[in-house]
Length: 452
Image (cartoon, rainbow, N blue to C red; front, side, top):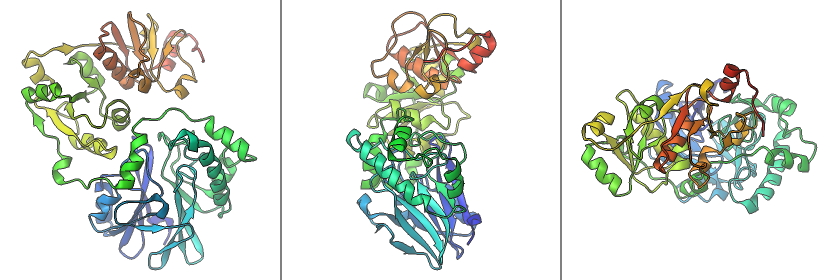
């Protein structure tokens, strides 16, 4: 087998990769599958392969594992014995091997990102072919160690250092296939590339180059930002074993406006997933704007409680299947349906509507500004005098004082989400910057950005 038989499947929204591995004999395995098995099944079908194993590197905090979905279709789940999975699987410990009929998958204990973490070394005879490193080694970094609990962060960070030294001893030319990458909230700052080699990381990874454990810990922990609160519950979901979804779970029912209003009276959340311009032009009063895009799941999981039923507003052209996939991949299963007829039916029913003003980046400085980007983005510059509050913290009591306010992010989607939260809380003197952020404001006005 060669590494040409390893096929990455990227989840752009979560910044993660899973891998379908052609074992060369008509069988395949998948490393760290997400919940929707469709991409793996379709790729296997095109290549005339049968998926026989679903391999986990760790208990994921950022997505619901798809191993049970693949197991329901005949695959064996392989994971760390220390993960304590409460559904049928094969548990392996450090240095134990899975015989794949000519190839061997060897478990390499690499705690740090999580306590039970295993990297998997694919071996042909005595020759290592590939390392599936999960979060133990990323391109330009390692995965964060603060997702379990504050009292475990330091011990896990030191464990990550020891794990990195163990991987450091592998051959320079060994290909490395991480799960987490750029855009993942599990990642410490790293490179935009998705795969690497041991030699490339030895040469360029600043964490691997740290002279000692103390320097490593300082570099790793100093680069960590906030993360979505749903991370704190998904490890348990994946350990218990997520529900295997039925065909009906992948469909979004259409609800007449009367049924939508009853759902809202009973505690459902109305999520308007239309583009920001459509939301600004008119939306159901009280709706939360989260535009459907690759990052949709992240912000849904950050801002909406998992036990609330969800009702959606969509445009005709939007991909319902994609919305459902994004909900399911982070464990949101109470999908009541979508507003039949979209915003037109709400308007026809004469129900309360909200509207928001859109402005270009060059107009952002005309009055008080709220910047809702992540702290790591704000560190590269913000409008002078802007109030900076991360979007994920805005609904937690850190709302700005009253009066006119212009809300901005980098493009407009997060700013619109923030404006919808503020509007829902009773603010109506709001403008939303679209089509750019602080960099575009500076370019348009010739004024320099401030830095925190």
